[in-house]
Length: 137
Image (cartoon, rainbow, N blue to C red; front, side):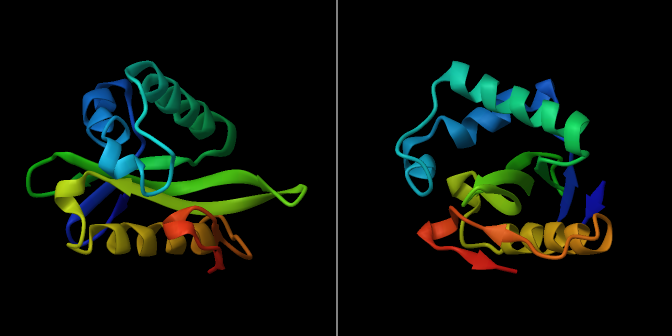
């Protein structure tokens, strides 16, 4: 769907569940933006929500797959979020801890931002939960 130098960014599928659990079910990873790690059931519900978002909006959080190994190492994408009584387009991401501080999140976020402006014709994009600050891109 979207390709960067090192990543293929595509819709998640049920076959990505185990890789997704290596993100969502890890306490240290999830403590960054959520209170705690997800249970296996919560991880499945998360995946189900994004599969529905693809159908409803044509976008959601997407799988970030290393071209080199075909491994899903994270998720990055766009979601509609309620904020101050309106719906806004948010860019968010989560990656396996082993891939932090290597530029993958930045690479994926830039590609998703470009997709939002060029393909979806978005006028603005927000980041609400990333590192506990709010910004407009």
